[in-house]
Amino acid sequence: MKTVLTILTLLTITISSAQSIYEKGMEKAFDLWKNKQTEEASNLFERIAKAEKDNWLPYYYVAQINIIKTFGNKDAKEVEQRLAKAQELLNEAKTFSKGNAEILIMEALLNTAWVAYNPSVYGMTHSSKVETLYNKAKEIEPHNPRAILYHAEWKMGAAQFFGQDPKAFCPEIDKAIAYFEKEQSTIPFYPKWGKNEVKRVQKNCN
Image 1 (cartoon, rainbow, N blue to C red):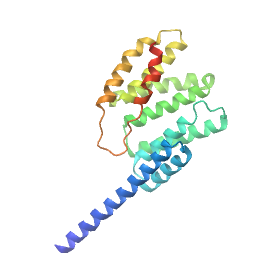
Image 2: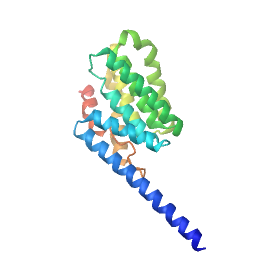
Image 3: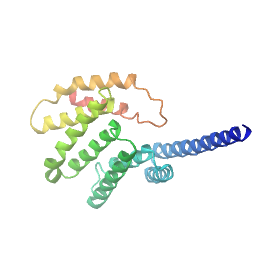
Image 4: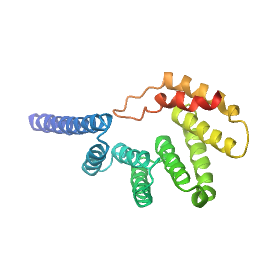
């Protein structure tokens, strides 16, 4: 009996220690990102991903950083490399968490980045992917504020492109705001970004 208790105690200590290392690493990566040291943050998230092996979150955040870095970037080679890498990372994340709405939302943003980078080349092929990914995410999590907000922004952009009124999608933004207020998660470092982007998207409603 004493041997069993000793083994269980050692296992508990080992698991707690691993969680502590993971949490400290993630906190450090977020601090770097917050202080605009994005490359350092990306590298740390990637190291954590390789160490954790079966955790989708570090892969997700490396992908997010790479996607964000492409918007407004005029370096074609860098944009293509970052988006290709982001897709590989999200594919890896999906192997650990299937049917994950947050990963689908990030993949929709990735395809949006391709369209923004070169509309004449990727507009036709990737626009339908964006729509499909957001719809799938909302099927899985109908109250996900990121899915609702960024899908509304996407549809507003499409409406403006085709000479239609983007204000038709403003009620979706109100829904997103309400869901942001209610959003909760017990999983450490679970995605909760997007609320600070509401005002920017709302400008389309003025």
